Image (cartoon, rainbow, N blue to C red; front, side, top):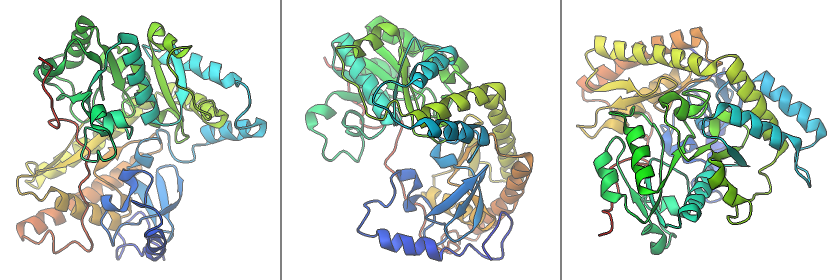
Length: 445
């Protein structure tokens, strides 16, 4: 019998997952289309590699095992898998069509809706992926300012302008790399060290897992204005989760341009570039940013239904309340077990992060052990609490009960020096992504 959301007698049988994995060997480089979904981010030999279906806050793998999910498709699911209000909107639009040879009315209607809820959305354009709109924002900033240099902080996608500053930079010309600089979050000194008269824009995730300190975002905006550089918020995660208007609403700081995707359409592929009308007007004739599927109607219908549901149900507040319960509960358990200095949960409650102390260099082993034991209890977890509206109080209570059991086992394994020995598969592997203290470059003299 497949495993369920409970303490199962054994780890899940993942025979069908492994068969598919074997078929993908040599056929599909890296195996997954999204790095965070790939086999390196889960305990190899224990975790499922392929999922078949999802509903609410649950997912089922190809072997039939059921899991309570805290990944939410790595961000796009804000309401829940198979959420009827959104799916009904998709079905209704499907009867009329998906893509057309002329503009669809939904393009206007959803742009108007976005203008109502996003603070800086004087003008709006649609695309399909976050990397598309962050790249379009950078191009717009360069065109508007007549400058070339970009300062960034966070993760902004796979395109050349950004990925050239990471460890996965092969294939990016050096001339492109030399135009992008980085700075540290919550560190205005690192901004000042790189900001100069050739800086077209400063682009950042307004928050990842640390809250802005000492009015960092407001100071950053003032520095950009004084320097004649545009401020761009990459709101892939903060948008429609921290607040309906994203980080701009939540922190009370508006950017010149802002980029959205993920939670805006509850799983349908769409991305949004929004911002100042004078900057965005360059898209009329001077800056080229057009895509065949930008006006695809199923995703636009899903966007409208999702935004209205987020508003009507006050979903951001619900996500924060549920996430806060998990965050406080996890930290209380760690404190009671005397391991709070080794592991704790931080971040915005809608997207909490479990942190493991890395003084011993074992943080990935620690994460892997906790992940392995949660999987045995029917919880699919990769170190995050990505909350959705469909998570129930019973789900939260069950998760905290599982944490109590798993963290006690974790403490025992640490004390006995058997953390690695108790893993039943290959541990989680590191990823290249970093958000601060990498590839810093000084300002031009």
